[in-house]
Amino acid sequence: MLTRALRILKPRLFLGSLLQRRSVCFSAPSPAFSTGAISRTTAEIDADEVTACLDPAESVTKIPVIMPGNLQPRVVVYDGVCHLCHGGVKWIIKADKYRKIKFCCLQSKAAEPYLEVSGVTREDVQKRFLFIEGLGFYHQASTAALRVVSYLPLPYSALNAFSIVPTPLRDSVYDYVAKNRYDWFGKAEDCLVLNDKELLERFIDRDELINRS
Image 1 (cartoon, one colour):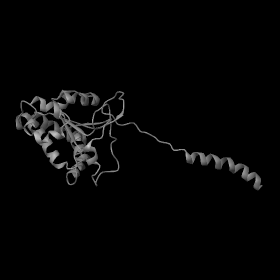
Image 2 (cartoon, one colour):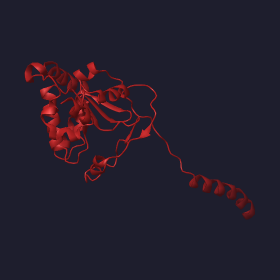
Image 3 (cartoon, one colour):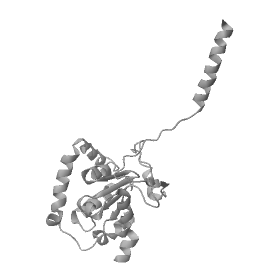
Image 4 (cartoon, rainbow, N blue to C red):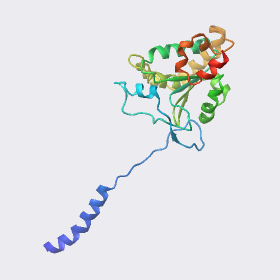
């Protein structure tokens, strides 16, 4: 009886050993803002990426730093001639001591590949600014704003708690302000960051902007 039991158990133990040695990795698809096949290549990690990793409050769950070609993650594309938008950018730069967020004026040619990969047009971004968080993670309007502040240190990141407010309600307020922003705050002839050149180091289109000034 003992011999018969060993004969039954031996194949099962061998199979169990094989299963324990084999590591299986599952990859869930990213919630893309737009559909379409995108080739994935690892983005170049610059000094800002290294600095960002020093944040002691950084969540263990991160958006993969993977983007098509030479595009960078965590980029805000916004209406550069809007006084209200530019004021918001200046506030983020001041609060973002770990330098995680980068910027690009909608009016720059450098914005075009970011619009293409996100599946939006310039007209779309004039109404609702765009935040490219990573490959497959593109946000607009109030959700984009909340995702941006989530990368800031406390107490600013606590504003992300407003995510519990239903998106249609948040976006209705955003759209109302966006529709009237030129009347309320004014509009410039060119990208306003050219008046604050000390901020250009945070702009991925800085060389293009400098050549235009």
